[in-house]
Each structure stands twice: as structure tokens, then as C-alpha cells.
Image (cartoon, rainbow, N blue to C red; front, side, top):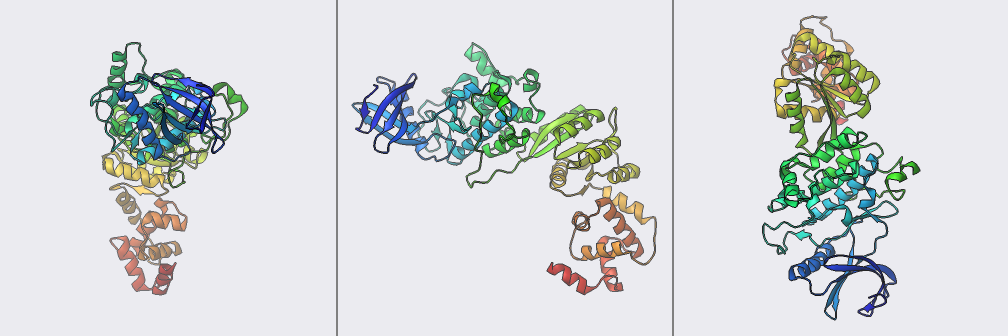
Length: 516
């Protein structure tokens, strides 16, 4: 075949590889004077293989993404069907097994973003594995070989229930011959990430039926058991991608890409030095995974759970793992471990119990606020006593909720605290207000009380007032309680109305506030 020209245009120059159904050559497109790859179908292949070969062209033709190999042409000459595709220099992903965590996260994020694009175009790859992914010398990922890709509107080439794909990378639903959706690709990518991070597959057996049953029933060994240097956050991402139940996995490639990028420092490729070359063939300057609009997807909130009640902590971790906008990066069963993991991982939110062995939450809290001020702390406890509430808030907690508040309120509280807000659970705010109200005070409002009531009249909630005045939420609550006591009001709104009537705050000030 070397030297042969197809359609008086595509000159075959070199052999690149051979498969069971097609041979791939390096070629020259004489018309456009560019290097291409030609995938030539072998003669006498089964009709199903021929259909899959042609399906690759129709699947790829609708895709235009920097991390997916482009297809340029499909034709036939003298009974030989061939595809003309983008020629990709570089190594297959097999050469990147194993890799440093930052490289695992960066390459994985590119693959996930490309899959997200394909899924948005209703195409499932169905055969994600290292041999079908190349990395260019510049660090750009290229997903290849869409021969098994299945457009939603396409007729199924294989019989319903037939297992097709590479056994080591099959999803549980593929292994059982069940109907597939896009989440099957995310599981297969989870297998690839596991292999890159540890140097070995999560499931392996020479007996294919046994291997398929492992995918369906056996939980993978945590990656850190094989490779202790894998960050806990990256391990959490990989294990979530490998969930047996598709509803427990990431629900989009975009969410998986964002989680990978936030799981390892410098996962965008910055900070990678020549000392890393032992784990990869080239020094990469990755292109980055972006959404179809070109913007980076939002990163999930990184949450650390600290509670000595194992069942409660694991239940909470499982609940949060089902969400794409929250990622559990670590768990701790005592205060010392909680503090150390917080300083090492710098999560967005530390969910902290107060009663724990070795160090209690009230001891951990001020140390976290002093040594890791970027970490937001949400106290989750069963203690509703006045003393615990005030001590925790004075120590710098951004929220205080009770374990009896329920799952929906807990998730909402984590999101609000992670987003920069402050939260007091049911009954907690009332306790604080009641404590301060009982202290009494002068009838005349202080300037802080006057400004606070002005903002109440302007429609601000307590958290917004705290942010606007640059005060802790507990201080605002104390100010409001004192102002309510001085105005003999039952709630904050009546206090503001009384202040307006007394002239402590003026309508002109309120109108000016509304204009701002």
C-alpha cells in the first residue's frame, strides 16, 4: 500500500498501525498539502464491522472540538472503504501510566471536557481507554477511534444485550448488556484515571466473565492503597466516577472536569517541571478543558467532614457525593486529624462537630481561622446550649446548625457558607437573640444599632447586613437584639419601624439607600 494514492488525492506514505478490522496509514492530502491519516477497512470483514467503520465517520463528522480527532473525508476505491482523519503526533495515553497527580487531573479534565461536548451532541463513545487517546507533544489530548460511538438517533449496529467494548474499561451497565447513556463514558474514564494514578487497573482478571462481574459487584480498592501520594481529593473524584450506580457518578463531563481541576494544585499544568518527565514522555503545556461557550466550568465546593460518629459521617459523605456541585475531599474522626487535613487540603468548607476525641471543635475552630483563614467553617452539632453557640460564633464559625435540621437544610447551609454567606440553623438565632435581649440596655440607639436597623428597613437580611457593615453575623444578631430591647419590639422589622417613627432613622436615608 505504501506509495499508493486513493482518489488521485491521498498518497499513502507510511504504516502507523494495524487492527482487526482496519489498517491505519500516514498520508499526504495532495490537494491541501497537509499530512493526514488514512484508516483503510480490511477486505472480507463482517458486515457489522463495516457498519461500525462507516458509523465512525458519521459520528465524528458532527463533532468539532480541539480534544477530539477530526474526520476530513470518507470514500471508497476498488471496493476498499477508507476514512481520512486528522494526523495526530504524540503518544497514546498508555505512555502516561502511571503519572503524577497533577498530570492525571489535567489530562483527565481535557478528556472529560471532550466527552461533555460529544454528549451534548448526543454521541456516546462507548470505548474510552488509553489506546484510544493520544497526547500531543504540546500536552493536548485527542480522543480517537469513534468506531463504537453511538449517536442517539443511529440504528444499533450490535444486537440489544450484546457486550461490546474493552472488558477492562467497561461500565457495569455495559458489562450487563443494559441500555447505555453518556454516564457509561464517565465510568470508563474513571477506570483510565485510576490506572494513570496507580499504575494498575481497578479490576483485573484473565477470566473475562470474572472481570465483568468485578465491574458489576466489586468495589475498587482506594487508589491511595496503591499510591499513597495520590491526594485524597483526587481519590474521591476517581471513586465517584467509578460508582456502580450511574446516578451516583458525576452527571456530566463538565462536572467531572471541574472536580478534577480543583482536586490537585497546579492541575492546569502550571508548576510542572522537567523532574516530572519520568512519569510522562513529554513536558506538557496543556490546552485546558473548556465548555462549549469557551468558559471554564464552575468548580464544585470542596468539603471536609469532621465528626467522630462514623455512620453519620459516612451517610453525609454519601449524600454529598451524589451532587456535582459538592465534592468531599476528606473525612476526619477526631479533632487533630480534622485540623491537619484542613491545613493540608484547604477545603472551601469545613463541616465541624464540636464534641470529638483528642481535640474538640471549639479548640480546632480558632486554629483553623488563624492558620487557614480562607476556609469557611460550618459547625454541625447536636449541642443547642447557649454557651456552645456563642463560643463557636465568637471563635469565628461562619455557620451553626443542628444535626436535627435535616438533609435539605444541611446542603443549603453548606452552599451558603461556601458562597460567602453566614447561616444559623433553626432555633440557634432565637437562642442568641434571647440571650442578648435579656441584658437590657439604654433607650437611645447606638450608631451601630441605628445603621443596622436602617439596613433592615432597606430589606437586607442579617447575613447581608453583616457583610455590608463588615461585622461577624453574631455581632449583628447581638446589635439587633439590643435594638429590639431598646425599642420594645418583638422582631427586627418592628424595631426598624419603631426607629423610623421615633426619628432614629430617616426616610431620606432609606430612599438614598434604595437608590444605591
